[in-house]
Length: 454
Ligand code: FES
Ligand SMILES: [Fe+2]
Image 1 (cartoon, protein in one colour):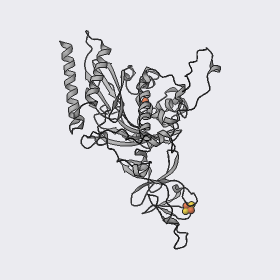
Image 2 (image 1 turned 60 degrees about the vertical axis):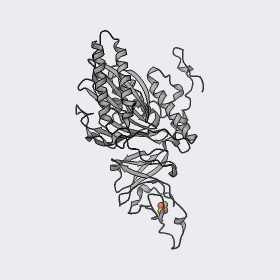
Image 3 (image 1 turned 45 degrees about the vertical axis):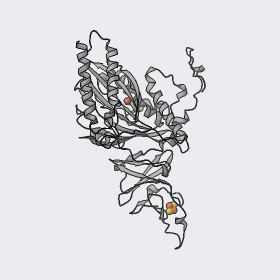
Image 4 (image 1 turned 90 degrees about the horizontal axis):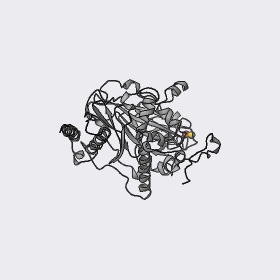
């Protein structure tokens, strides 16, 4: 790799080197690309169930033009957009019991790509028996339509994580289009420093003032990918928060409006489960579920009615605000999309707070190399209540600062010890994992406070 430029000349714009190409290995998604091939080995959400009515929906994934439709028997299907006869888009087709019928000359195509009828042909024509249309396996799950875009013989089981069936939860599907590469949007989940600046100090507190406190930060590998660990002192409390990356392109985020002070909580779970799915090299979708359950939404600020196709219930996630508004109160969308259509890693000057981004890129490259070496991809081997445990959480514990201890050190230690409880240990494979983790955290906090009192 070329040496990174450190410009050292005042008014030296003239000496800035030209913009180098993007890191294609991690960003490009078309068929045959390294990251694209990795992402195609996983079930990917394509759109919301509610978007596919009796009319087909035009979509694009991995640089391929597609149509998603539903037969009149309610089977969802994902097929290449252009009819194999003479290329008319199947978005103008008619959904029938057995498939979709092209509007132009009536070819009938089944969800698996079988051509069932070519009605303009003379009886006895064997064309339809000699040709298939491009199709992908599709399924519907909790309001999202998923597709599998890899080789059919390698199709994995659909993995069910613990956040998909949480007691008292209402999962509200949502999706947002981002006109930029998928990786820079995905990386944001492992960039806790942006919450301090973009979401708090730069304009106003988008969520709560505690977010503006620069946390102790750590990044830890988990059986499903990685987490960040942020630990902050907020008055008498220590607030520890982790977001999940579930490799390769899935993520989970904790309570959006956590303020570190209203309620004490141990291992409070997921506020958002989302994927960053590639549309093509320069476009992606953030798509997944907002979770609404009393535990992660204790102050009742979230609003399920504001979540759906092209909308979500917190500021700065889309490009629909006025340009002036976006300039005055920029959000995630504005920060990430404006990194360029594909962010240029060779121009970055990475620092301490980018450790999570660097680690995520490294894990993705590790998985790409495993795939290319035909080794099994990393996946969690643990189940609790039949689901794969995840690690995203907010924990707020009362541990006042102690005059005899360095407080930064104490906060860091609490973050690290809680993370061990949350990520390590045999009890993650038990059906009472949640209770076990919570009890262990409570006992740990008692022991820290008792130790300080000695
Ligand atoms: S173009 Fe589709 S049937 Fe002719
Ligand atoms: Fe953000």
